[in-house]
Image (cartoon, rainbow, N blue to C red):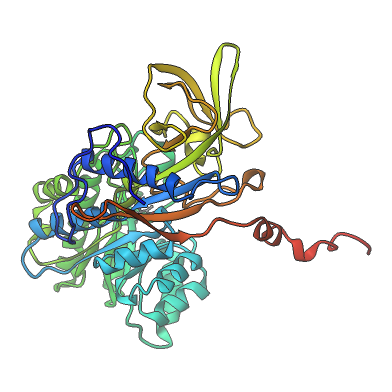
Length: 471
Ligand SMILES: *Cc1c(COP(=O)(O)O)cnc(C)c1O
């Protein structure tokens, strides 16, 4: 079916994209999004049975993956080894991992589930990195058997790895995570480089640095250092300082060892995302240039690099589309009661000040809704008063059967479902807009089917219904 060009402001949305196309402009992505919403309605993706769906912009994901690769290619010496490992927690969807893998991007995993997803997507062991702070011995054993890279979080974990490799060598590149203890960003819960963060060896604690150097000298097979200074809300300068701290430690260890024992530095992820508009800022290119200025020695060809970006690869390329079931008012406040709330946007609902989301209003046909902006609440379906996607938000006055889209939700939102009220996980569909000159069709591919009520019953112990009776 054909999407109308509804408002005359559609731009050149159909440019064919290869992995090396330049990054999208925000306007191009926004036009593609509007076409996808219209097509989702026309193709019946929104219904009584599924009044909320999630959409992923395949061209946008490809474009971000290409931008990431190009950014680091441009600042590293020719022939440098650079592995970009996508932080699976940002979008634990097998088809997304496979799409990224096709773009040369590996996987950073932090649980048996995430490792299984990466393997199901066909991500090679050589492009997989295991980083959890609570790895069990069994998880470590599996990782070493598979040959995936492991970053030890702490001395006790390192002792477990000692024991495991004493029984036989492993192909796994092995490293240690350190916390440069540089301070927090604007969101405490996502700041991993504070003095008391739970991650890695706290480098500035008394005796810690010497202990780390010794640990490497005692273990010739320990060849990597890892840091991840935080996610959304951490300033780029702080991230770059964290990388510099780790680079200086690598230089110190290599000098003490008298050889290039540390051959690879894993700089983590954490590039923040602009949730305020369609513009993709900051860019990978900007961050890569800042690293080149701050820590040129890391990029001069002597070290391999691993990156672990999550949010910045996916966030701008996903949206949650939900029907307005009822439009009402209370105390003079218009309220749109929709099907998108805490189950798909837990962070925004519980910590709205840190995680505001843009909301786009569409009419029942999926066309951008015109009209004067009126302050209103965009509520979700869950049974608690705080279940609001947006409070007092100026938007064209929403009516029953209109649609709302929660934008920039491609990472950490609908893919990280929250099961409150036994609300179903919505379906996720990838969309691809046909090229200009073709018929203008938007094609959808199912990435994840909606959870059924039968599945909800099963996952809620339906098979154990009698478990608490008798006895
Ligand atoms: C969460 C996490 C990432 C990804 O962070 P983003 O902010 O999504 O880029 C990378 N590495 C580690 C160790 C993480 O915990």
